[in-house]
Length: 291
Image (cartoon, rainbow, N blue to C red):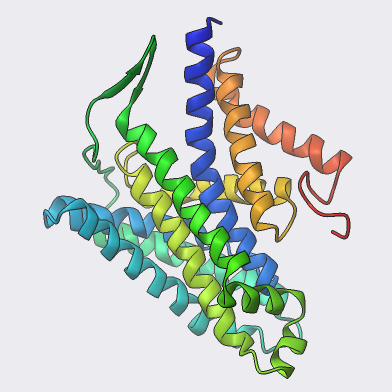
């Protein structure tokens, strides 16, 4: 492998990893705060893909306006998902399995609804950024560079909110002990709703960035949900920072593996790495000592 090819491979790995990190960090945020595994998270990404297609292509809105409308709408849907579907179930003693079953059912419902509304055809979104960046012999489309830059910016803002603001302290307090947080006046239910909205916003951001590179279809969220769960496990269940780091690591492993084996084997190698990690370190690569 030449030096130029190696650099391009690493950059592509970081770009893929940024999408995995966006999705996985949202799942980790939900699990860390509520102990809920949201199997409908991939369908939020899918719906956001259709929303950006509607606003930016069908209605012809400017990109910034279309992206903002998509993020707001998907965050509202994420909050509604928690309030209508998950919150009532969490009042039961045996809520864990009920929530898993409910989110799997919701995933199937949303996929079927998308097929009914938009059909089964695969639809494309034009590139938002045209042209190719050239640095020496390294060439990279601006659209792909934008994915990495925007993803890093969004996750950085989320990290600042979690660790540098009052809202972040409230979320972390609820994650540590919801009953104790409630005893000191923190509305745990409202915090859970906010967390689901933020998580949906992260998935929506991933969909907006991905939509020009992949076709929008009712099943597009399935593979990214699997990668998201892999990232959560690798990073340590409930660890936002661990999920971000694991997302980039998984993207790099996939990208580098394609340089040596056929691309069809990239998923096999990625999940083989996951199995090896959880066998050697069940708590995840980036979990703290108390995990």
